[in-house]
Image 1 (spheres, rainbow, N blue to C red):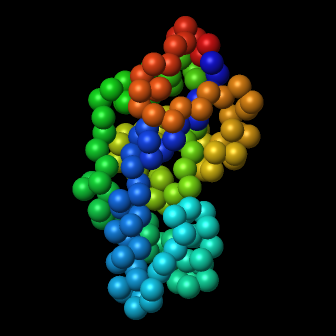
Image 2: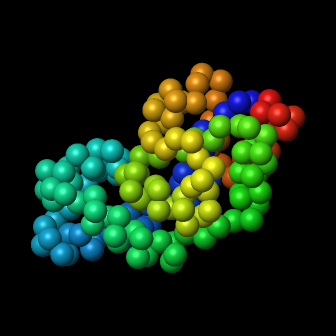
Amino acid sequence: MDAVALDLDAVLADTRPLWNDWLEDAARRARVELDVPADRVEASALLDERLGDWRPLLERFAADRGPLHFRPRAETGAALRRLDGAGVRIGVFTDAPRELAEIALAHVGAARRIAVVGPLEEVLRELGAGAVVVRSRDELAGLQFDGHGR
């Protein structure tokens, strides 16, 4: 195994509650209704139309409230250290905006071990065809490799 692609929300940090909190706050502050799609890539396009330059607002909100939402998990951190130490490239896929994903990764102590963050297709393209997709903490814990990236 040379590379793994981890589902951010299912494996490392569930960003959905913080995203929902931000949407409520942004709607209240902007005095607009933000009925956005559940898919955050689609929601981002709608927010571009309705709020304009919303990404710095999300980043500030997430930075302020990140410690309330994201906590490191010892077993997940240990698995990431083993993979990283074995030379396995680690990517993270999500539909969350990059600003939110990066703050979540920083708060759970994973940011420096991650080579690429983005939608699944983008992450797999960057990591290569042999990347193992991991969609749960149990799958991460059960990864078998020889300690040399295989």
